[in-house]
Length: 203
Image (tube, rainbow, N blue to C red; front, side, top):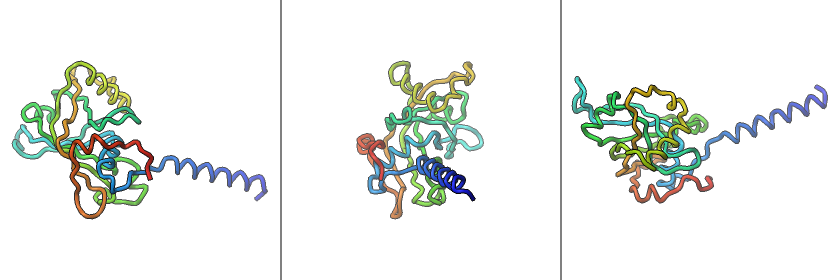
């Protein structure tokens, strides 16, 4: 191999390494539980929502479904998960009877857990469970921000059928549970959660 070719190979490997390093997910320290919760909420583009079913044959039973979410445009986390919903959807019909729900999000939805070799069920593959209720947003500043938050991260939504009675909603958080390390689940109050920031420099 010539010196020129060898130098080119070294340069290419260096560029590949730099590219891979720049795409690695760096998480907050597990001791900063509220910050970890905010980080997960902002990183995840979708969530599993559990409602109490109003549909046969599972009336009164827990029912889990997937929804696209956003807590703000990338780099502008609010901590509030926003939704773009239609009343035609079965879970939304559940929420119209009982707005109480729980929302689960996991770093398994990002590159982090595969990057580190963590199974999705491992405590090291951090996840959160938010308890609360889903509230429809009236037209106004908050609905406008929800639209910007969702459409910037889910651009396909812009072209969804206009005759499906879409509306914007938010998740009103009353409790946050975090599992991000060994030792069991940790509880975070809404005040602690909203006072934390995912944007500080990560370790």
